[in-house]
Image 1 (cartoon, helix red, strand yellow):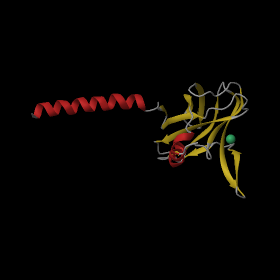
Image 2 (cartoon, rainbow, N blue to C red):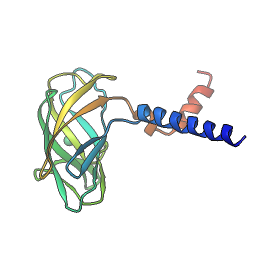
Image 3 (spheres, protein in one colour):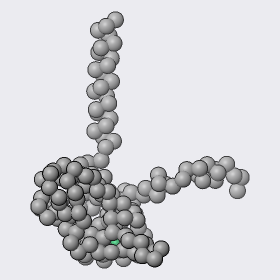
Length: 169
Ligand SMILES: [Cu+2]
């Protein structure tokens, strides 16, 4: 009895690790940093500019900075944030880069910090990916892959979806 339940547990643990290694997005280490969850919104082909979002973990004891980035999909890549100016959200180019305090996780997301892609040279199509080279002040350069995926649905209120499917029109 004991032996059987033990081996069952082992199987479950193995299964769990196999599944999680497939379902979790790639993470990229450089210096004391780990970069995870790198994505872009898909955009219509006519779009001039785009943005990339990511999460940076600073596991070190010293402050770091994301100074900028380069990519083949854009003529110019800059670190941007949004500031509220008289009730209007305005994009600001962070010429000194984004600060990454020690022991903290900095999340780049729509409406906040973002990696701005100026002058797109190829379309950001859903389901595709592209290369982005991040440049950090101390850790140096890091090549990452950006997944182009539509996340708008997951951030929306699902109750509105329910109502839609319930209605008869
Ligand atoms: Cu921007």
